[in-house]
Length: 275
Image (tube, rainbow, N blue to C red; front, side, top):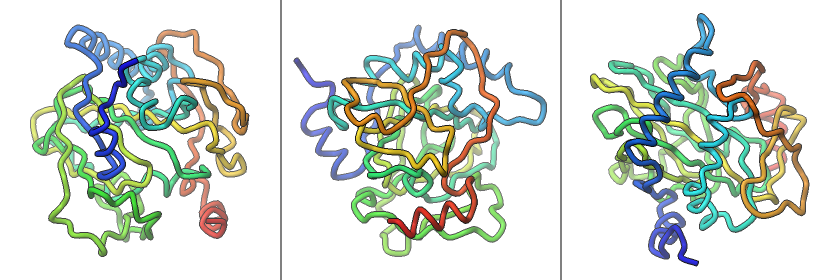
């Protein structure tokens, strides 16, 4: 059977830490996706932001079906192998003229997962380029392990309170990830990446989806809400709780989200002492 990714693309992922502009949804499908996003946005309550749309694939069949899209899973299987699960999703929406930025960071720093072998799919709901705040990466930075993340003194416009120490990298190598709406990029959990604000008149909406091989175990003492869906293959490890497939077309979650940092200093110290 023909692989979804070429050998060259797979080599690029392992060498750079990211591949991009992978087509998934056509124009008609994309229109339906944005209509569905509009329905999900209606479920936000007063005072909530779009960042609250996190792990809603556990309650929304619309979002679950996106995460389980066969084209996306075909790409992921080329990188993770035949046995992997879905465990997280999160919208990142920068409205026009938004100052919100994302500081340099590594996803794996925030996740109580062992071993570090996960990846993130970034699905573009809009055309994304440098003008409207596209993701930026430091190519090859995923090869150096986990770097120090320093707490910001007044995070300003950043949505994160920590910033990865990039002093050992040549930032002239930074690449901007440009994509058409309906395309995805895929990046390693240890790739250093971030994004600036959106000074343009165009929205920049993207859905991140996280997948891990079945040998990856979550520390449930840090994140007791962690649940997985078998995306491909079988799970012979059974390390993590299984979630039920949602039945409601447009649904939402009401719960506290817990990464290592969100779980508090005790969890952070525990994780980095172990590793």
